[in-house]
Structure formats: C-alpha cells, structure tokens
Length: 334
Ligand code: SF4
Ligand code: SF4
Ligand code: SF4
Image 1 (cartoon, rainbow, N blue to C red):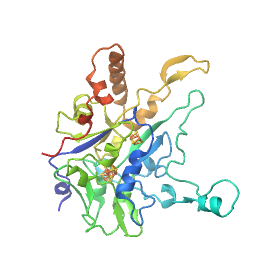
Image 2: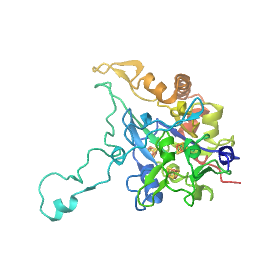
Image 3: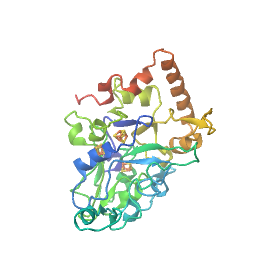
Image 4: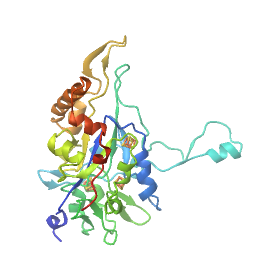
C-alpha cells in the first residue's frame, strides 16, 4: 500500500490539553500505564507521560533527537537508549523494613536518571523561577514520520478516526519508526522485539468512551473530539478560536495533539512582594515550543480572562473551565 493510502482518514480525532489546568498529578500517566503497557518488556515505557518544562524530558533531551521532516523530506533521527528513558528500578523497602538494613531508602539498581527525575525543577532564580507541566503522548499526526519510515508497512492511520496504530502482526522490530518520530513516542519492546506506542485507546473510542488519559484527568485539563464536529470543544479551541497550538510544529508531522499555552502563570516579582506586568514564563520559551503564533494566543486568552473577571460572557473561558463537561469528551461515533 502507498504511504498516501495508509494515511488517508475520513475523520480525525484530536486532543487538546490546557496547560493552565494540568497539575502534574500523573493520573493520566498511570491510567495509561495500568491499562496498556504492563506486559514484559514494557516496564520503561510511558506511552503517556507528563514532564516538567523547561527540562530535559522523557526520554532525556527528546526534542534534540531528530526525525520528522525537513523540506518535506523524511529525516532519520537517533534512537534513545534505555538510559535516556531511565532504567526501571525498585526501592529497597523490603531490606529496610524486614531485613534490618539501616539508612535511607534507595533505588535498586542504583539510578542516575528516570522519568520525572527533574520534576518541578524548572528554571530561573528565586523569586522568578518558573515551570509548567507538559503532558505528552503520540500526536496521531497527519503526516506520521513513523508510518513513512516503517519498511514493513506495519503502521497505518485508521480511516474512521485518524488514529495512528502499529499492526503487531506486521511489525518485525526494525526500529525505523523510533528513529523517525521526532517526539520519541514509539518504544522498542526488547522482549517481543516489536515497537509499541499509544494507539489512542481505540478499543474505548470504538465504544464511544473517551481515551483513559482524558477520562481520568484530575485537572479537567484534557479535551478530545473530532476536528469536523463543530460542537466539540476541540473544534472550537483548534479551528474556531485557534487558541490551541501543536508542539514543535516545525518537525513537520502535523500533530493532532494541541496545547492551550500557559497564560495564567505568575507575574515577575521583585522579592518584596511587588509584581511587574511580565510573566515569569518567558515568551521566548513558549515561542520555541509552540511557534510565533503563541503571542497572539496569549493576548486573546488574556482578554477573555479579563472579560470573565468583569462578569462579561466569554465562551472561550467557559469551554476552558469545562462549564459543559460533556463537550470536553468526544461525542459517540455515529
Ligand atoms: S507522534 Fe510520532 S509516533 Fe505518533 S504519529 Fe506522530 S510521528 Fe508517529
Ligand atoms: S490515548 Fe490511551 S493509549 Fe494513548 S496515551 Fe492516552 S491512555 Fe495511553
Ligand atoms: S491527569 Fe490531567 S492534571 Fe493530572 S497530569 Fe495528567 S493532564 Fe495533568
């Protein structure tokens, strides 16, 4: 089958995360992990992960790994090693609690890096240090580099919802998808010798149930819906108001996971309790991640927030607040 045929879909399911509402609780991470990646060889995999930005992320330094497209040409990137994800470890509770070993609880084997190793660290100096949480998953891209790179035609985009899925009957573990995805979202399973990744919870989606990471989100930060459904909050945020942006769009894969940038972050302060008009999170960082459009988005969101503060109506704020929470989840397939 040609790449064009394998990427054709009639509808596209898309995800929006409001970075102002994500509290970094990792409930989505655990929901995904418990449901889908508990098999042998999957210990180190977090198809869904929430990292601290700015930071090195998971796997370490993933935005530097390469892959994606340059001038429409597929790029071969690097494949992260297990140490970049973090070698899975246990804490030695048993030794401390039952075998009389003294001292502080330690990881076993000793660990030097793990997912969220640098959680909440961020950047900047007190009192103007800052960070925000960045939930990540497969972007179910419009132009999936993983799919084009796969020599075995094992990756395809589902016609009914645009989710990008690995066909394990065909995957022979060549790892090209892992090198090609600039978001480092396919993982190699050393036991099954195949690639694994988020498949958009399609068994749930087929029953009209929202993906687990969305349904379990404690912060009500996630929206999921079809990009052709004008009633969905995803459609409104992405298409109508254009206040949700893809991450690192320059990678060229045209992601279908979008982010409402952090506009509610605290303002700079002088240490004596006086605040300035500049936000602590630098615009340059947000532009690097979400592109130059982010400046306009922050302005729109700021205005809408002020309307709400003055008791004036704001449909954008109502959607972001989740005033009609049913609209945050996709409508069932018809
Ligand atoms: S994020 Fe990566 S794995 Fe997911 S569809 Fe895009 S290129 Fe493929
Ligand atoms: S959509 Fe499902 S498989 Fe994908 S990250 Fe969310 S919970 Fe995991
Ligand atoms: S469950 Fe929601 S609030 Fe918690 S980390 Fe995930 S996206 Fe953020």
